[in-house]
Amino acid sequence: MSMDVSALNNLLPRTSSTNTASEGADIISKEADFQATLDEATAKIDNAKKKDIKVMTAEEIAQRNKDIREASTDLEAILLKMMYGEMYKTVPKDELFGDDNAMEIYQDMYHTELTKEMAKSGGIGLADFIYQQLTSKSSQH
Image 1: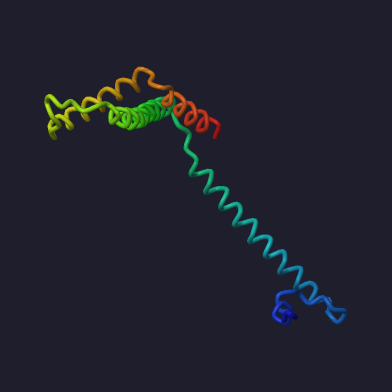
Image 2: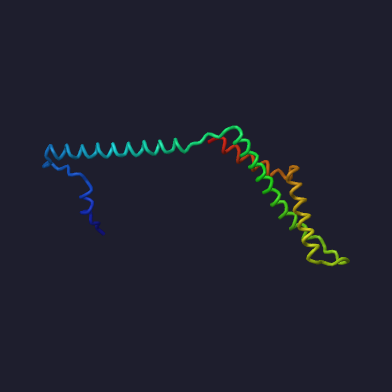
């Protein structure tokens, strides 16, 4: 199978022995113009990056860390509630009082508050792990 490379010939500079000195100078000039354009674009990108960089103040860092701690604790509470809910399903139902919608809502609210308090008091350590991972990664950049 053969490829048609005639289209590629137009992309390459003509460097045959029949080139004149003016054609060689033109090729060199075009290369210099391209390099100057490339350098200018690179400088613009570097300047734009420098303008976008914002240094956080100590108060902003403290607030960010507080928000990360709160979100980590909330996530652990959600996961604990899911685990607790699945475990609670294995408990036999109370046939004396029956199952009604109000009792299910009350138990769900109770489990939510219970797992929130569990997470706030240390839980299973997931919130601490998430907090450490998020704050150590962001402080390195």
